[in-house]
Length: 419
Image 1 (cartoon, one colour):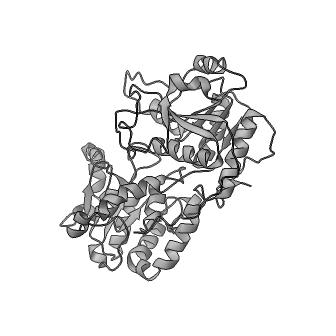
Image 2 (cartoon, one colour):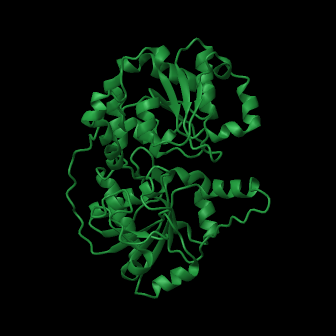
């Protein structure tokens, strides 16, 4: 197995009594962490705050009620969680991440104490979500959204910079200085836990495939996989499919392309008509395999030798980092991690096919260098990046006492910090 390789112990330099609550929404008891990235984002942020020394915790805003020890899939002593209503009174800074409320709720929260702050932490692309909800909504849809006018700040994950910075500023009626990208946070803790099931004596005895890249397979037997959720225009799989198609037409060999989160799309007749123009579809046997959403670790173990990835204006995704951590060749167009994996630009299918050729035909000769590059990239998104912790400490300080620190707001993808 590839990790965990992040073994340094961070010495806590900052001991603060600041109470920080991060909102989450539990759909059901023991809901999977892998249905989307929102809960993971909240947990990773919580870990960073605790490493700094803040008294940080999760605030549940759903019908699932305390006690939580047997209702969530994480250690509540390490990642504490409380009911929003009962804990908010003693909270100093509210981070609205997994659940948001009304302006009236902001006023009620701030009435419980002096100098309380509410920060919205945005993980998705609201601009694209709004566009799709308006342009593609079914007739009579009652879906609604709201933009608070009484927030103190908006923080957003840095991959949303181009489409959303000004969008958030105007929609939330905030000054430019109060809307900013923040360092992206990732951690292998839950990925490692998910991998543990593959290293039991029973699994090993039954030769269950392991969730780590395995060199030595014949090219004709290799499986390609893509993990785009296929629920929005920013992340869907078709460019991946065409990269595999282009490589196949050039004489390349592989077993099949597994399209995770792709089962429902087969019901679309127009999509089916697109497939008829591909060798992937017309080969006998067909080289396409459509599956429902799966845990990344299971899909990597059972269905992947090489991961294909494509996005539009969303160049940081947990699934990419998970694949790198488990040492899989990642063919991708994400410029914020172009120093790792096999990078191609934009929608250049031919370039992607050439990178896929390298991944299939040459990766096993370059594994050591590839994994070293992956480790360097992954570390910048973790609590082992001291600059990341220092930045979040300063952001919290400034939220409470503006201009305590002079910090920039231009994100540097190479350091995951500000320039």
